[in-house]
Length: 270
Image 1 (cartoon, helix red, strand yellow):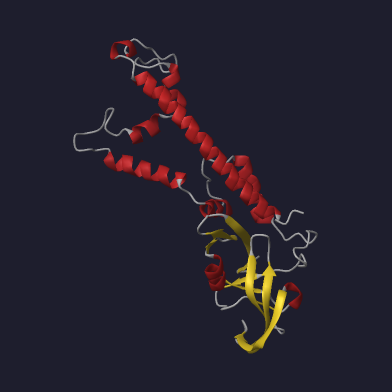
Image 2: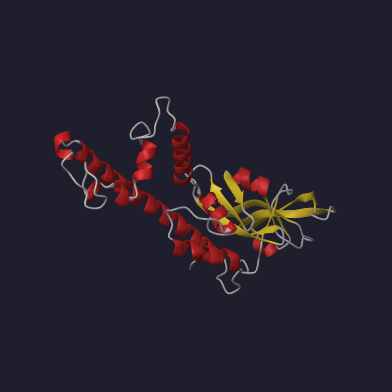
């Protein structure tokens, strides 16, 4: 059975596609570099006789034409000391550094940065097809919990968990969600409305195959399910990134994807 909701599956597909395209792009750039190196190894007397059929300039052929391939800007950034327009004091250094910094931002972009761009509708990076980004953006804007999806470890499909930055423990008022439930001495807890009550049991809850909550308190009078952000970060060694529509959880050591939630009415749900 497929345990992941459509939004999660599409996000993972986006990350996988990006990695594949980055790998392909690196191989292409390496091949281009080899071809350029072979061209530059020709004697100068031979290169001067070459004429490009695309730009009509001498010194190269159409196979190594920067203007045709669109590589001129990239070449200029990586070779600031060559070509016209650079003074003896490095007059182009500021422009070159700025361009290199911009390329670095795109090349090192993390998955959460992609989510931020998608959720805000801003222009996306160059490594993902526009069709895939459009599909992902539509799902972000229109995604709703699927009431007909399969149950996860006995969970009802309508069960939702709220991310709570003020909670010290994960808590639920639904005893059916807790596996390996154990009785504990009456432990006082503070409810979101400021009132005090008591937890009577503790156990484990499976949110998904990648997200398991340990030491979840059962509070009989609680009418919602709360995920403690502090407890989640400590237990899973993860980070949580937020946009105005989504929250994304990643494992810190491996940078693997754990889960994604959505924001509704100022609250983030899983």
